[in-house]
Length: 288
Length: 198
Image (tube, rainbow over all chains, first blue to last red; front, top):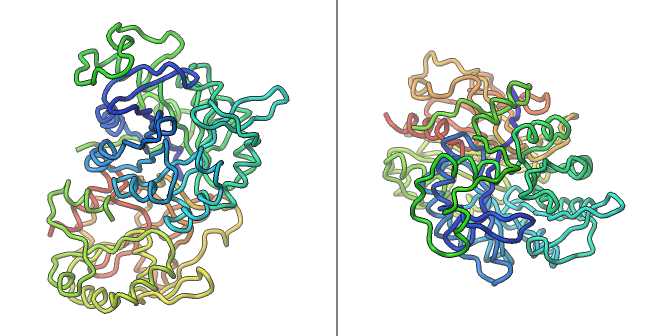
């Protein structure tokens, strides 16, 4: 028995809805975040990651209600990111019920924020998220605003800097793989994991539970954040979806289509596979 | 703190957050939480004159639970930033995980399992902690660990990268864990429920 690999469902949130995009464009509404969150909690999710995907663009950070509701019912760690720019933003989201905050754009624009936040709230509360886009020379550059804006920063050196500044955890998002279901970028994961000593969580590309197994086997990451793989399983088995607000693109939901390159799976199935291959996981989670 | 309140609400306990001596003493049970720096916390405890209410409450025999930093604060001293004195309820030191070779990733974050070491003989309180079975997973996030002097104070141990450390203590009416019951799903809620349901 030892430290388990953390399986972390990632929920992208726009207003009141859970959404999903491919390459961070074309957001489709998938349903109500709280329903998905509760399902994942019951399935044995180790943590939850909520990402407000439009906050940075529109300057708003409207997740508080969803966060508070989640915190009252779901007793696993919750990380919240998206549009967090100031110490006050961090304080507010923690008060709403989040355990950790994830900062990307604000951290790159003002690295001092990372150190002040780390001192004020504790390093383990501060996650620095880095959106990585592969370059021709095999390195990766960091982007902000959901992969829209270039920063000129190479990700390994930025990750090391973030660690030095006091980030308690680094979250690496592969913009190239995200939403495609084509598997994780192992090279990216390895590059970062080898160079930093704080926990590293990887997100982007899971299309099949074997992808997760492959990453877990090849790179000693601390956690793996997964979106489409799980969301599509929940949708496929809950066709009677109700209660999504008619905001955003709901055509996908109404169409009952499935994404062909994603072989949807449950958290239970994933963990069963991992354990079968001797990857330490928290299993047999009972829910009252 | 808010998470603990949410958990206690969910479990149906009437609870409040306070630093008032009278309120503390009149409560049926108490929880000392904490995240962050030992020395900062001790500064606040001393500034708010909380050391006496805490130790008095513990002497009353009512159930007292410490969580994470709340476990560490109960100890004699911590090596964070040189040496800082703690509440001295449990004999022992708080030490850094980084002292140990092989632990190259700090803080220790995530779900890890506990092995039950404590004996439940002669301890009526322990029966209320039946819920902690060996092999159960709980959520940890910390860079320091406690090193109790007395073996009998060690209730569970946990292994991180080859290093085994004390993950919870039990001493008379005091139970304190390095892990966060309020973040450990149903397993954690059960610990809270069992400990405070007499």
